[in-house]
Amino acid sequence: MTPQPPRGRFITFEGGEGAGKSTQLRLLADGLREAGLMVVTTREPGGSPGAEAIRALLVSGEVERWDGVTEALLHFAARRDHLVKTVWPALERGAWVISDRFADSTLAYQGFGHGLDPEVIANLYRVAVGHFSPDLTLVLDLPVEKGLERAGSRGGAEDRYERMGLGFHQRLRQGFLGIAASNPLRCAVIDATQTPDQVYADIMATVRARLPVP
Image (cartoon, rainbow, N blue to C red; front, top):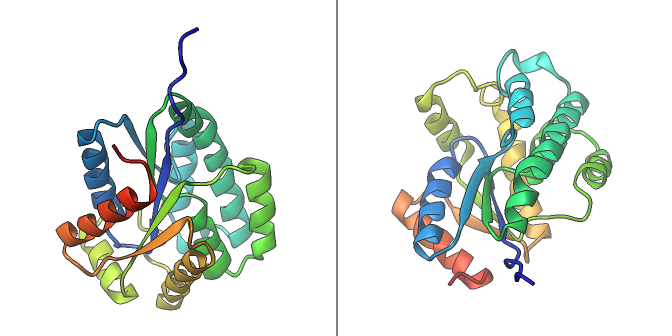
């Protein structure tokens, strides 16, 4: 019988707008590949053809396009397709999957940001995701004003969430920090005000301390 590859690991990046998640995800993926690991990078909303189609509905258009419940339903529909088509098959192959956002973003954005009842989000999670969760979540934290300044400088059409008010983004930051404090075994907060190299050094040190990197 051919031995099965060991199950991979699932790492997620979380944080507010402009925190540097995409840059650090690429750096971490390169570092893990250099360590000999098979790595798949992905994002939410998105990461599969169906989820990417839903992404277009969420990240562009008018700020008031959807209410919190509709947003949460769309995010979990995209998340289910992402897991079924991309994440779970890669983990079964033994790959390490790194995602730019996962379910913590729904709790932060739609829960803390829009005021949606956390129990509603928890129920949707049970239906769409089940008992599955990331092995490690890296929360990149920096002051809201700095993050929005960074995000604004990159431009692009996917700016619907960035255009939401300052109070919304303040609630997001506190939401992510609260999620990390409530899940210390899974989450680690990384100071994103540092240089990209310093942030990456902290991230790699955290990954090596918590997961079996060769």
